[in-house]
Length: 179
View 1 (cartoon, rainbow, N blue to C red):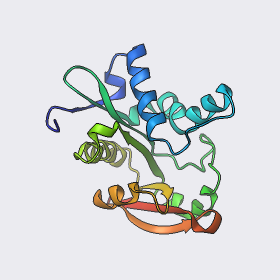
View 2: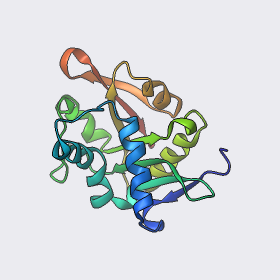
View 3: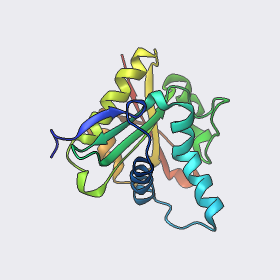
View 4: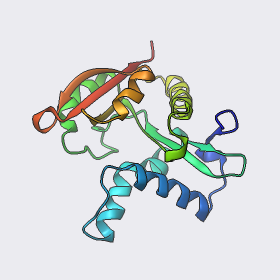
């Protein structure tokens, strides 16, 4: 299964309703937030964590695609830190402002449940890092829940904890230098 899943640039894949549906299904399934007050809140959540990346930084978006064309994972990212003028700073992330200066690139990676644990997410990260290096970013950071299972995933992919923040240190900032 692993070798047959290709990593493709989002810009190189034809935009279809099915593509959007596959990405959205993975996004909402993987999200810790499962319920929304209304459809407007759901759309705003998608925009904050996925949509703005596909719109503003599609050159840093990657898809994991099966031979049949099904999207089974994606990565969206930016070489601009979340505190930049282009992107809204998420609640709790202000604590990591200094980290953003040293590791400005950031990413969000999600996989369909059946494709987790196969190394595909790591391949998505490798594709992003290659392009972020080419764009002369010094490093990448991710912010996630301190007790989240994905902390182990990021550690396996070369990230290390550098800071905690948010209410009662519930958030952790993990970084990976490109040097």
